[in-house]
Length: 131
Ligand code: AMP
Image 1 (cartoon, rainbow, N blue to C red):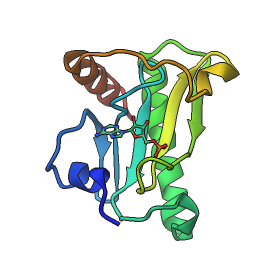
Image 2: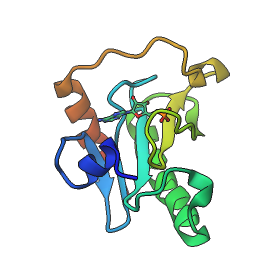
Image 3: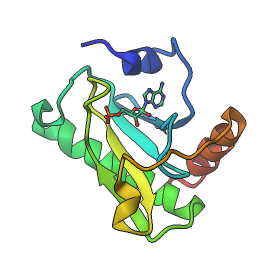
Image 4: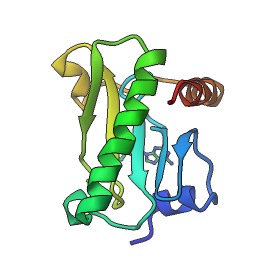
């Protein structure tokens, strides 16, 4: 199903891109729970993560692993939390969130206000640290 993420993949609306290859795209969440909150998506239009074929699911997680290593180099945190919700946007996405405690994964928490310029700088910074 086409969604706002399809428009991002196709470049019809902008994102703060962290990484991209032929199958996957990673960009900063526009409404972050923490500085460095990043989304990782497959380019294939699939709503539910457990409907992905095995290879795509495995490679999506490996792509997320690569991104998490970059986030860790830029954002001070205990570790990167990973979660999948998908109730808002019907296109598979992994949330990568810098955390210091379990409460940092609570999506009911207030979001972090960041300007477009701050998001752009942060995305570039994470991108520059990827292996
Ligand atoms: P969920 O589908 O519940 O996992 O939540 C969707 C996530 O996508 C939320 O954290 C939103 O802030 C994020 N989001 C929605 N639209 C955009 C966008 N245009 N760019 C970046 N992140 C977005």
